[in-house]
Length: 214
Image (tube, rainbow, N blue to C red):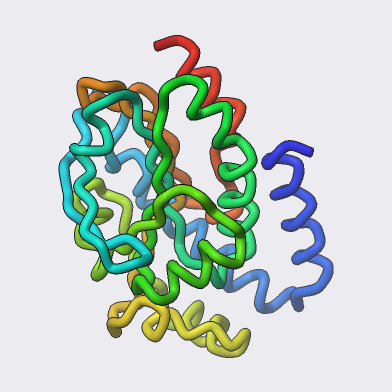
């Protein structure tokens, strides 16, 4: 089953399970981001990816440029291990990893969560690629991916038992939009996917097609 199909089924299940008034608040937050055209302001195809040094799940510093020096690089930004849509995406990327490697590409995921929390996510999903912590969303902000959760949405998350500041180690309530970049060996973005709607993700098959064209 494709990631796109899995995400659709998850959304349909959530719409049945979550009360309509809560769904409306969540949808309103998404529509507000769309109204700002936030995704259009993010890095896009043709831009050169910025370098950064981020901590992996073992608290080791990893440099983006060093990963991109020997071939294509796939970067996937996700909100956190508490997000069911993120977990579906991470598992799908893990399943596609052999194909990515066969095409000479490396894969990393980036989250605003602390290394301890990203380690838990990596273990839960049995990930064999690097998961890096972008503390304070510093790197994601430079790429134009970050937004701040509105007050009513924060309250909903707390009702669900989701403490975003605790996961991220700060008090900002800032998150990155789901985003995936495929970067060629020269550091140029050849495929960009940024979604204001957190239920949407880039299917690995699209990534594979982009890599095959390199």
